[in-house]
Length: 593
Image (tube, rainbow, N blue to C red; front, top):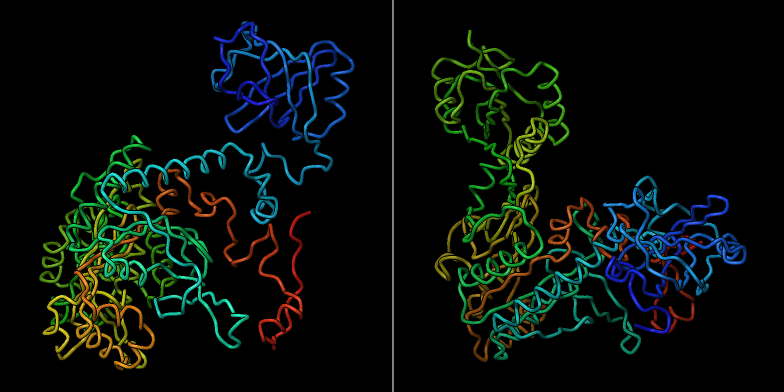
């Protein structure tokens, strides 16, 4: 292959027995049995066992260099002796009898952690030495998967007649739901570029420009707090937009891509296409979230109307939701006390519950429920003898939030959640607007460029929060993979839509000038969506942390421990940008050690 090697490690097997070959990689392990020395060489493909001859000079060379040094080994491929073969290793039937070893890159420092024990190493240490963490089989596998998935998606999109186009990284700031990362301009003092939260306006401008099917694997930048499934700073998405397209046209493309993609990289069962469509309002009631995990069979029931006229005082005047636990009557008091703690941790003032026993109903709320109440609840929830019921009574938002958390908790505790499957759905019919509970101010609840259902007539409704939009999310196993919408391509309708959120036409023209002006030269109806690449990879790789599918991730606190960012810059750099800091910069942490 090159001057350094003739084969990668796992390209060798019994077919090369007796041949002289050369491999190169990291010296992963040395096993010194006195006169006989074994070592493992590891490259991108995997490991190969090397056995040294009884040669003092060669053994001395190996003993004299540090583990993880980079070496090239020339030798003869031979079958491992009977009884020493390793069926768990791709090269477990062979070994390389070394005749020559060359040190290509010596490891002169002691390792900060053992690669074989990386799972027990603190994450901050691994991220500070990411280049070492990256040598592990797990991360090598994830990075390879990332490359293959992106290539597969790219091939699919081109086959579906989409055109790949790159959009700018330096752009203008616009309100799109998260904080912008700002970049000061040296040439225009006091002015700033922004890194794009998404290529939203650019992809719509491409539609106006006559590019009817656009896509890219787009970097997006948002100054958001990190969490297990969200990387602070930057992430990548399959950004796509289609002219002359309806919501269903977008669904067809995405379902085609996802069905083929998940079939190519996993043998697990998956939701057949078309994926279920669940209205947002229904999702919030039945699952307590707009990201329902359909692997969990439990559903929530709304009992508000019934208890509005009942004598159960704690339920009156509140949104009442119930969760049926099949077989839950067999659970002890500790089980329900723990769930009450979950409810209060999520913001509820408490949780009511009862068991439906053979000899009657028991539990704190049992005595307050009349026979009529109980009959109505059993009919609505489908509960029967042997089951248990959990009740939350609160505001609509809190009731949904808490019962959603309880649904997840019970599903996990009782091991009700399906394993090794992918359950997809679309959540549709999002509200166009939401009202701040404290101030009463109306704002967009989703994408401000979305088309309202009902058009101009709907925008003249008395209550803006009653207006639905052609907005949709695709969800898999409780993860939101993507948001999208049919776009509002009519400038007059756009002005009306923004007016309900408090924007004047002049503000729309100044803040979204390019889009607003472009639409006045004739814009086709268009729609799009942007599935997150990193979350897709989390699902396909079975990783719980999004950082483990990214080569160089930030911490949850948005710090790059490897490069030491963010970090102070020199006074000269600040002066060039006409910037003066008013808060002393913290001492930068070490980049590497």
